[in-house]
Image 1 (spheres, helix red, strand yellow):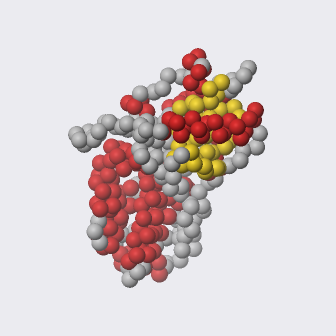
Image 2 (cartoon, rainbow, N blue to C red):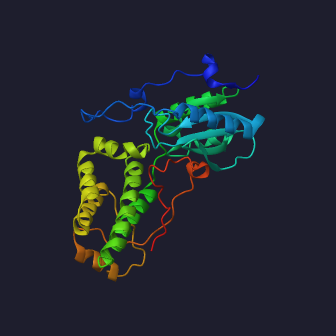
Image 3 (tube, rainbow, N blue to C red):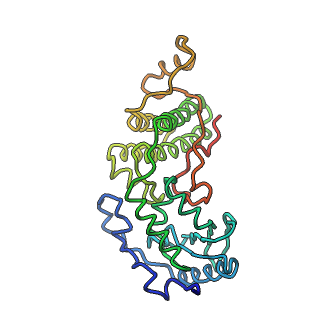
Length: 319
């Protein structure tokens, strides 16, 4: 069977989902009344066709599928959106490649198609990314079958976070707050560390609540829809005008997010340490905790499919 462009074979191409279906995991939240409907910028489809032509020419008979993901698949393209493609191949994958078609950046992630299918069982990001995919090229319905499998995997929920991962997530977030407290006299550095703290907290929110990751542009809206109190604290944190106000909002955010999780256990059997005394003096804020094991290498890491939407836990080296 000769490879065909998905758009030319209605039998092998599932109907494109509606915008409502693509956002099914989001609870209804009224949008601002003056928000205009999304309109695909001129030239986007031409750039998309050029990118597909490039990938097909490069991989030849090794290519079995091309799937558009990200904002293009969600029908949320803006003037500065790039084109995110997953190229499924039979042979060794080339990792990631960045090219330009006209003024549009194209991010191409290559993956061996059987490995990508297997990784669906383990990755907390791959299923929600692929289930919204738009097939641009398909050989023997490889891409269509992968999207169907991703949709099925999505309905089962993300891989659960065990107790050790939950404790680690809490420890890493509290570690950042402790470092910020230590560096109050260096406000620029403290503000930077607070940003890392918030990124890790967002990851912890999805993992500890058993939720699939969303696109970055949907993250705050999704968080507020699932936990309005956390959403309000996130808004206070991001809009705070001073280091003191931002740190205060961060403490409250962490307290609420991790209220049901214990701290890592002490194993030395001794009395209160200098660090635990410092945490006691700080009273309402989390104390300084050492970093523990880095996060497990996921399928998404191998493919680099995690849209940089939500920073992956463990990418920041602890100080």
